Image (tube, rainbow, N blue to C red; front, side):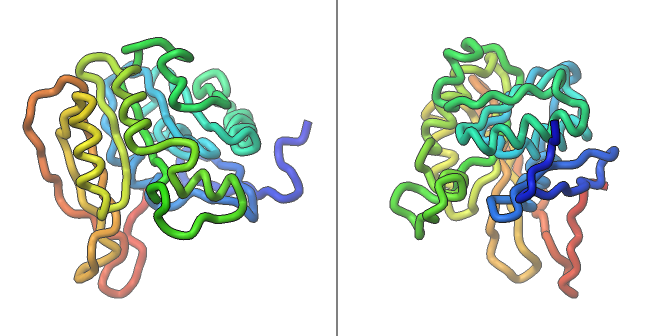
Length: 239
């Protein structure tokens, strides 16, 4: 069976030889996935759930960087979930990263309650009614809160995390208040925060947030991250 379809491409991630399959005309991963994978801190032997996994970019990067005991990944769009499964086959990771074509809101029923040490998520950034919805369903679902909401993501994460377990999320900077509110609503206390800027002198565009279920209040604001230097050179990498 061919792992790659005619309308797909394979990109080398520059990390231990791992690659990812992407649709040439579909939604492709961006720097936010790379940033989140570097922001995540896992304990040895952690069991991880990645929500809104897309084609599986964050699980592959996490495996290359930290090698947890197992990663489950949830993606609601069947065609995208299929690409993620084939990406795992391509990298010989199918027994380590298990992709589920499922609704993340069903995660507690699918996996059980309070079983994961960490949850990662790069969710759709646009809230309901925000921005122009792409007519291609997979793209729309990736970018807009159609199949899930921020509240739903955090609610499901809180249900499947162990007490003290961590939720790691990347989101738009202008929705930071929404992120913090959702975390605290479901007893996930924000513990680390890093703000991402395109370059010096530019407004922040992303935030990286770590929260702990049932954690005590104490937020560490980490150093700012700049994507490009003053000369416009990309300065973020996995190396």
